[in-house]
Each structure stands twice: as C-alpha cells, then as structure tokens.
Image (tube, rainbow, N blue to C red):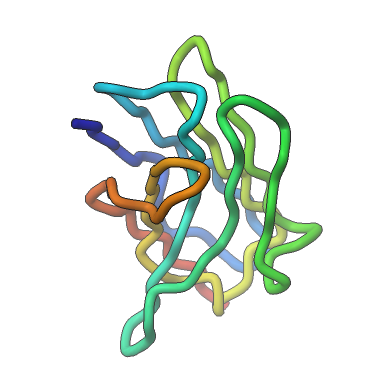
Length: 118
C-alpha cells in the first residue's frame, strides 16, 4: 500500500505563486512515477504534470507549461509542484497520484484546494 498526503494549497491572487507538496509513504520503489492532477468545479479531473521517480523525465499539460514545475526529493519520498504566474482558471482541487511507470495511477491523495482570485 502507498499513502499520499498533499499540502500547500491556499487562496492567492492572480500572478502569485504557490508550491504544493506530496509526501509518499509505504511501498515506493524506483519504478513508480508520480503526478499531479486537478479538478475544477463542474469539470472532469485533468492531468497537470508527472515525473518519474528513477529519472528526470517530466511531462506537463499544455495549459501549465512554462508556469508550473514538478520536482522530487527522493530521500524524502516527496514530490513538489511549483506553480508560478497563477491564473483564476488554475483554481481547482489538486491531487497527487502515483503508480507503476507502465501502469495506471492507482494511488491517490485526498487533494488540496488552490483558489486564485482575479
């Protein structure tokens, strides 16, 4: 089993920055990738960014490229999402997730709310 706990959400103004953290515990290995997703009210959950735990391969949604950066601290089993130049449309509940590189994301955190006011 794997447990994920997100933190760092909050209420900010457009143009501000936030850094989300996701602490993982349990059976984490180098074959796990980690990702961030978000879900805005009335919308489906969407992919934001991902990173492999055994390398530096990262992927981003087009909507956040150049503004968000995903990184990890392997010694702490923690993944971060640095969010700069936030926009009101970034308002959502942000979820951390993990799973095997070759499989689906099958472990999810409880989510952290990010609200960006205009």
